[in-house]
Length: 53
Image 1 (cartoon, rainbow, N blue to C red):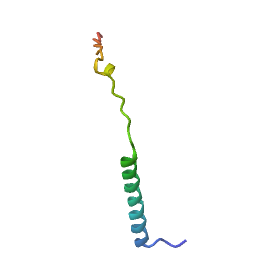
Image 2 (image 1 turned 60 degrees about the horizontal axis):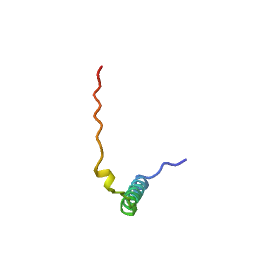
Image 3 (image 1 turned 90 degrees about the horizontal axis):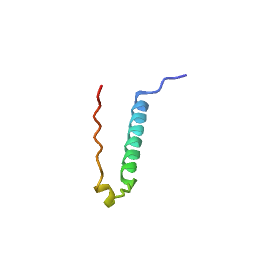
Image 4 (image 1 turned 120 degrees about the vertical axis):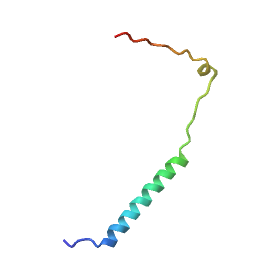
């Protein structure tokens, strides 16, 4: 089995790096988070736990 030429390795690296960047950018810009803000969340009671060992 012949070895791959160094140019092929560079092209493969560039191709997969480009694909990784494109997938990450699409995931970032196409993801639409939905934040539910209600009046109840503003009046949250913080429970303070004091651990005694």
